[in-house]
Length: 98
Image (cartoon, rainbow, N blue to C red):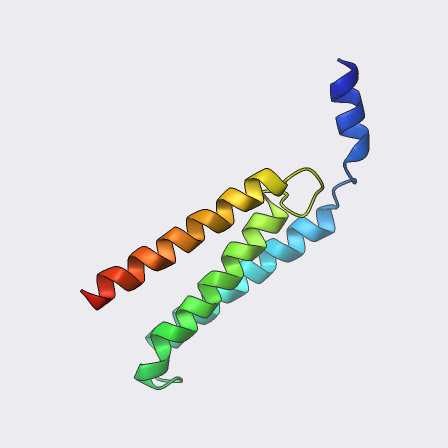
C-alpha cells in the first residue's frame, strides 16, 4: 500500500489542457490528411510521404500524451516500443525489397 502511495506522489499532475490540446492537434492532422487526399493541393508523389509524416506525429502525440511515456519510470516500456518500431521498419523494408 505504501508503495502505491509513493508512486502516486512521484507522478506529476496531469493537465486537462495538455490532453485537450493533443486531441485537437490529432483531429487537425487527421483533417489535414483527409483534405490532402481528397483535393489536389499536393502533387500525387508527395501524398504518401506526407501522410506518413502526419501519422508519425500522431503516434508520438498519442504515446506521450495518453500512454504517459513522458513520465519517469517508463524506460522499460519505451525501450520495447522503440524495439518494436525498429523491427517493424526492418520488416517493411525487407518486404519492399523482395
